[in-house]
Length: 92
Image 1: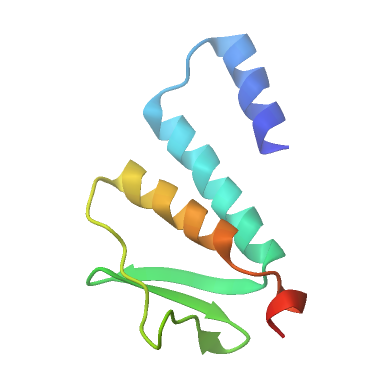
Image 2: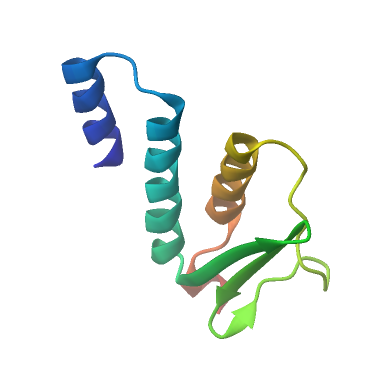
């Protein structure tokens, strides 16, 4: 649905500003996170706090660290990170 909305907006209004692309990516992240039962995603001090089933997701016993970069790069990394999470049934 997000891709269809993006395509329609481009068709009607032409190229989208970067802020619109980021807003659409944020919507993608929220939808993807909800489908993986992620209740909260927060970044603080370079760490990613991803809450699922009342527990924070850890890799190797540690919270994942988000690579440095601009907001667009960090959002892209978060999308890939959430996409890589196993579905709830796979990790239960």
